[in-house]
Length: 400
Image (cartoon, rainbow, N blue to C red; front, side, top):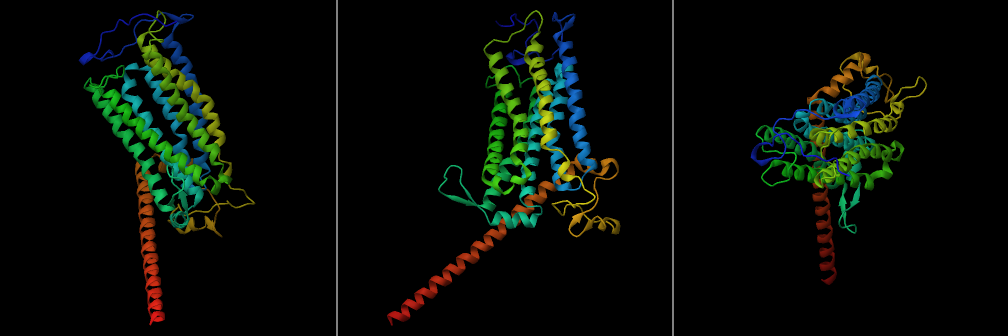
C-alpha cells in the first residue's frame, strides 16, 4: 500500500516537480508525538555518534601508532568514507534544502577512498617505488576480455591506475556541476527528463564508478596470490559492502519512488519520502559496516612490539634530523612517526597537498616504469635483429 497523498508544495522552475526551496512543513505524528522528521533526527543522530566514535577512534589509533605512514595514511583515507557518508547524510536530514548540494560529494569521498585502496594494495605488493617497478615489470596478466592474450604488468598497472584515478576527478566535477545546476534550477533531483542535468550527471558518475570498480576487481583477481598475508579479501569486502549497499539502496528507492510505491502520507511529507527515509537508511546501515571496518583495518599489524621489529620496513618517512635517524636501525623502524597524540599523522592526512604529491609520485613511478619497459623492448628487439643477422650471415657462408 503506497504512502499516499499528493504533496502540497509548489513545483520548481522549468517544470521540475521538485520545489526550488525545500522546507520541512507538516507531517503528522509518526512515533508517539514525534513527527518522522524528528524521529529521523534522533535515530540518525544516534547512529552518527556511534559511527564517529568508532571510526574516528580507529583513525586516531592509526595516527598514534603510525609505524608505516605509506600504508596507514591510505587506511585513514579509506576509513574516512564512512564518517563522510554519515555526516553529510545527517546534515541533509536536519537541513533538507542542503541535500541536493551535498549528495554529490559523497561520491567524491568514495572516489578518494577507492584510489587510496588501490595504492594500499600496491604497497602490499611492493613497499617502494623501485620495488613496484621491478615487481610489475616481471608480471604478465591475462586480458579481461581476451583471456588467451596477456598484457605486461606495467601496462596493466597503468590501465588500472588511470581507470581508478578518473573516478575522484569525474565525481568532483559532477558534484560541482550538481551544485551549479541546482543553483540555476536546472538540476531537478525528482526528474529524469533530458532537459534537466540530473539524469546526465547520474549517467556520467555511474559510468565512472563502473570503470573504477571493475579496475579494482580485476587488479585484486589477478594479483591476490601475491598479498594473501595482508588479507586483502577482507579489506576489499569491507570497502565494497559500503559502496555496494549504498548503491543498492539508491536503486531501490529510485524504483520505489518512480513506481509510486512510496508517496507522501499523513505521517510522512514529500521531503521525508524523497530524502529523509533514504538518508536514515544510510545512517543506520553504516553502524554495522563501521564495525566490519574496525576489524578489517585494525592497527594490530602496525603496533611495535618491544621484542619484535616491524615486518615491513619502507622508505616513506624523510629523515630530517640526526634524531630521526635513530628511528631506523637494521632496516626496522623502532618508534612511531605520528608525533605527539598522532598530530603529525593527522596533519599529513588532512593536507590535500600530501594527497596531490602522492598522486604525482605514483604518476612519476608509472612513467619511469613505462620508459624502462620501452627501453627493454628496444634492447630485446635489437638483440633479436642482431641474432637474425648472424643467422643470415651463417647461412650465406654455408651456401658459399
